[in-house]
Amino acid sequence: MLNIKLQMIWLFILALPIACITWTITHEEIFREPRDWCIKCSQNRHTIIERKFFYLFTCEYCFSHYITIFFLIICDYKLLLPDWRGYFIAGFALVFIANIYMSLFILLRQAIKKEKAEIAEIEKNQNI
Image (cartoon, rainbow, N blue to C red; front, side, top):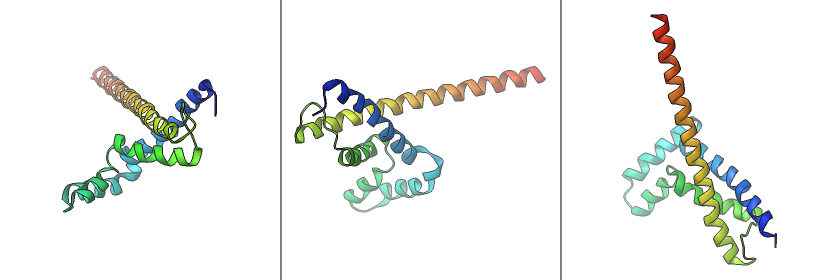
């Protein structure tokens, strides 16, 4: 079992690829067509199980749970406890940190967009 400091380092580092993969699949242009199809299926399928299954690929919070499970399996990461409870705690902690990273990324992107718009407006006014 890793010491607590090393476990915390793993927590914050392992959450980075989870956030990156989750964000890319649920928001970026490269996956737009499959995501649009999943959105349509999540709204139009007949059974609730089908609708919820397809919804998982459109919601970053929901999808981050499944990416986290994948990383827990391949990395064998446990937090605080050396048995199944360590996986359970690690899973929710990773989802939490990954979603903080994604929230910070959203704020950063919004700030950059706002700044670009302000610069464009200033340049437009100077050319008049």
